[in-house]
Amino acid sequence: MEKRIFFWYTSGGVTAKLRLAEKFANVVFTASLESFRLPSKKVIITGHGIDTELFKPSDKKQATGNNVLKILSVGRISPVKNYEILIEAAKIFKKTRKDFLVTIVGEAGLIENGGYELRIKNKIKEHGLENNFYFTGKIEHKNLPRYYQSHDLFVHLSKTGSLDKTLLEAMACGMNVLSSNDAARSFLRKEMILKEGDPKDLADKIIGLQNKKYSEELRNYVLENHDLGRLINKISKIMAN
Image 1: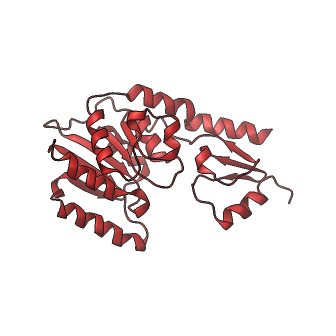
Image 2 (image 1 turned 60 degrees about the vertical axis):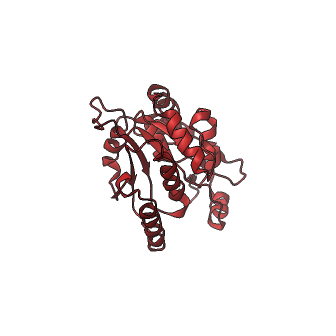
Image 3 (image 1 turned 90 degrees about the vertical axis):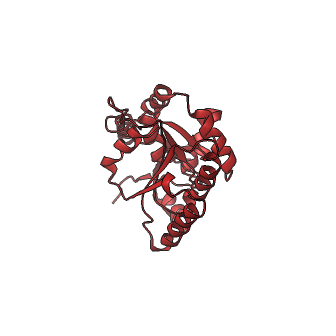
């Protein structure tokens, strides 16, 4: 039909379907360099589209009570999210600070990931961390801001390699963040970058960030590089040309 094809793709994986799709597309849009790993002259990096009017700091942040450090992780429960590293880090962290809570937002989603969820919950029990972990199950996207706004620190251990929107949503809400993601290395401070698969490094970095506030810096990065309005304007202009 002689229609131009604009293809949006954000994932670290390179599959046969992706190779075929790239051949048919005229332009490929992606959120970051790490989000499209197939060599192509068609690629245009646009950033993600975060609704910064929805994901923003709360004017009335909920009180944590008793100085409890509230740690958050958001995403489907699967091996690629590396939750066992967070559990091992919590075991280490509990030796120096007992008043903390780790909230995990998400569900297994796929049947084959149900076994993984059971394994990590058993690991939590083995380490005597039942009172330090809380699983919310599935939460609608529109209801996520209140979790970001009511927690102190966001931990992102995904092994996908591509830039994860949950990390940017947390930053837009003014949270301090820790990430082992390849794509995060270009814009996060060194003290926020984690060694992959290293629970002690995670525990040490949680301690190091406890009394530091980078809310404005992190939110401004999202506003300048991943705001939804800017993304729409950018893509619209490219398509018009």
